[in-house]
Length: 487
Image (cartoon, rainbow, N blue to C red; front, side):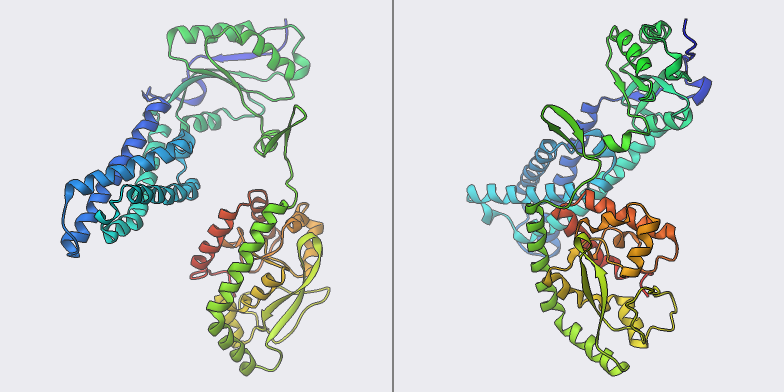
């Protein structure tokens, strides 16, 4: 016999605490309920927009039947698009905040398809452009709010065990996973734990050929007395003998068995994967953007920087005059920075200080810094001082979105302190970035703050997309209105 110890806990009461049995709903039923909810809300909103435009604004003829039918058509198209894109999957329904971009894409695509059908049927004139515009703008906001409220309600019901989507028997390694934490995670996903084993075995404890029959017996007993949808294995991947022993014996079960990645390998498995010559590979570090991605990003930079210079030219001229009249010195301040691949370039900013630091030691601006001029404080607080960097974008030294460049002295300092710091240079530095819209802007007074900024920069590089750049640029305009970290 082996020394491997499996401690059976046939009820959650023993280790995880008592939990009442909730109502079971299938994933399919939940998706159908969400789709029907979307259709109902969209139809009501379409009718409300038509009513407001005709009866309140007083434009057009009130026709509730036509409005209801049009709303149902729009709602059906939206539900079909969401279903095709896989956005009625359970995990995405519970995280509407993380699916905002996909929701906006589906909403926009629905409007285009709806308008295209109206054009083909030659009945576009039957729709009031005003009521459709009111519905499209306000309806998207209300529907997203409805979906977010529904997700919060469902999440609360799952955590309280009032609703369950599946039941599972859990075998877990106590040295890798915490029982109560694991239980809470599974319950938040709608999983009811109907039985579990905890093992403290190690690879050396498991003898080749040994099969933990006790585990199978306990699961079979649980299967006969209770509803059981799956068996979950939370075991260290170092103990492959133990895992293979369990796998061989659990093949007898009429339920699926899932092996979860342990905390050591999970970060690698969460990355992109690719099959190379029949072998499965996981991308644990992304290289620089591909040529097509660089082209798309460059075209966006040129368009956005050109538009920005044209629209903001009056503000840029006024800022230049203010800097010139407020204190002696040049209007523009140039400082050496590192760009893509560590290539140095001169960054442009409106001069906001009485000193020009561009050597081996550069002190970051801090709150109430006496080096900052009076007009410079205003420019820094509003980020107007960074507008000349639109020229850096046109020159190709910078991008509209990317990791913010630091002074060369700071790069040299943090490159020694933070292991992945240099990875930020896999893309061009940007006017704004993922870190900046998450409050990591301004002075990094501690290594912890810089590490958080680097963490956000690396996430951006590994998850880059054209739509992500657009999202960051739009959110930057909002963040600048009340950013307290700029000084």
